[in-house]
Length: 448
Ligand SMILES: Cc1cc2nc3c(=O)[nH]c(=O)nc-3n(C[C@H](O)[C@H](O)[C@H](O)COP(=O)(O)OP(=O)(O)OC[C@H]3O[C@@H](n4cnc5c(N)ncnc54)[C@H](O)[C@@H]3O)c2cc1C
Ligand SMILES: NC(=O)c1ccc[n+]([C@@H]2O[C@H](COP(=O)([O-])OP(=O)(O)OC[C@H]3O[C@@H](n4cnc5c(N)ncnc54)[C@H](O)[C@@H]3O)[C@@H](O)[C@H]2O)c1
Image: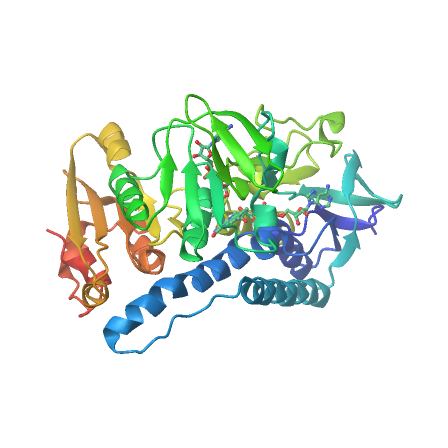
């Protein structure tokens, strides 16, 4: 019988922590999970899930307009934000309940409260309870990075965006990444005047330039304003509650809401990690080896707190690999190549593999195939929005190195195509596949 209270204590019940806890318990380990807020973590409570539901809700604005071209007599519809917000929050509550049930049915003990590490095998739960475990898994995720300039305290992050009283009449969103573009699309569809403020001249670093440019073009046409190469001087709260935004070298302008989406920092501070000798990099990430082991042998970490790829399916894979390796006698590691990714903008973007520039830098000679087309639904709807698919292949071997898409349902289509890219298929394999007509996805097998 072990001297410890548990075989595994997980700190943080988010995507990575819940998967690790559940799987380790299924392998027979005695597991507890410590959570200071809500079970489910960022993805379920204030990330992927409520965000995607808001995107569905917002997209009705376009669908209702387009429906008229398809013969539907759609009256001028009113949108009621509290209904969407509260239905989304109720769904989040339901999912949290499911997560709690799953943990319970696997025999995982949920310990509510903030956890801190007090020894290589010890965790203190806020309030005083100390527990011991053979292994500790840190899965505490990340939090929004907030800037510091005069008046920055008047801004919100994505955390608060799900709870707003009203849709802001005018909103400025700071950042040019995933969250900025997704929320710019949501608020624009819901009727806000949206300004995206970006410190560089480019959105979505890491994405292929063709789809990035297409998103700016379409977003601009939809009425989203962009301020590139911008830096903040100050923000002042005015008597009527609105905010005056002063960017360097520009005239001040007023908004009703300012939202920061400038990246997320690992939750590694005040956890007792350094005191135990766990090394943390300058950006706050816990340094781990290929098995998720930190510089202290009994302490592991998975997910956003390790700042590798901040995506839910990656955190889940890391949690699964950790549990199978340490408790299931089935050692394996996460393969970080060909992780597909999407931005749920309007229209959405998705990609897998290398950008054109990365492919040229890494492989040399490449072949590029594109399809730049107006989806037939957009044609009838008189929606002037073109989709763009781009395939990047190794010129020598024909192997697909990257696939990039912007257009309706791009993430849904890309997920399936990513299997082929991960499997190392060549363009010829796509060409040999007969098209499924009429679809947008058939463009992938008709690229010339
Ligand atoms: C707005 C938004 C949208 C997103 N959309 C997507 C998307 O569409 N697709 C996608 O793949 N990813 C998306 N992400 C990213 C995704 O949510 C994260 O990558 C994922 O949740 C990381 O999982 P994790 O287990 O590392 O951490 P988290 O899910 O963040 O879980 C960490 C948990 O630890 C708890 N915690 C922290 N410190 C302590 C402590 N000391 N004691 C006890 N508990 C603690 C937290 O309360 C939290 O519940 C989005 C993120 C945001 C913010
Ligand atoms: N669809 C999805 O899968 C999805 C959606 C949302 C979030 N996420 C995950 O969450 C992470 C965080 O999202 P995010 O949009 O906050 O980050 P991000 O890394 O995608 O983008 C951050 C943006 O902020 C800018 N920036 C950084 N520091 C700044 C500063 N001090 N001042 C002004 N601008 C600054 C960057 O140039 C960049 O444009 C993402 O990296 C992603 O992994 C994924």
